[in-house]
Image (cartoon, rainbow, N blue to C red; front, side):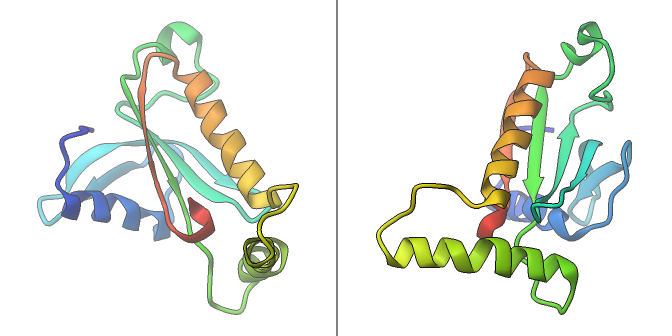
Length: 144
């Protein structure tokens, strides 16, 4: 992984949110299939959050701290809202997007929607798990 990506490469990284990765899968971008890292966590939470935590080398979140300290870069990719008819889309729109839109139209709200809270916890957890890593965040819609 590298923080010296072009805008096009950053877009390709963000587009990885739509892939079906499993833990320890390599994540590659571009025609040259440049590896940006390995999936260390796959999240599909009841709040509607779907995300991947990618580390520069594969290190499980349950690995000892001594191993996790070797991770130098972490990329968190949040999947945006779904549009197909599915339970994912229902979670996105009914539990999160529409209530957030209503809050925005009405000048704000007291509480962040469940998906935003969950996404925040995922990022906080990744930063705590890999304390020596520089963290990059990608996504769109309520994915970010």
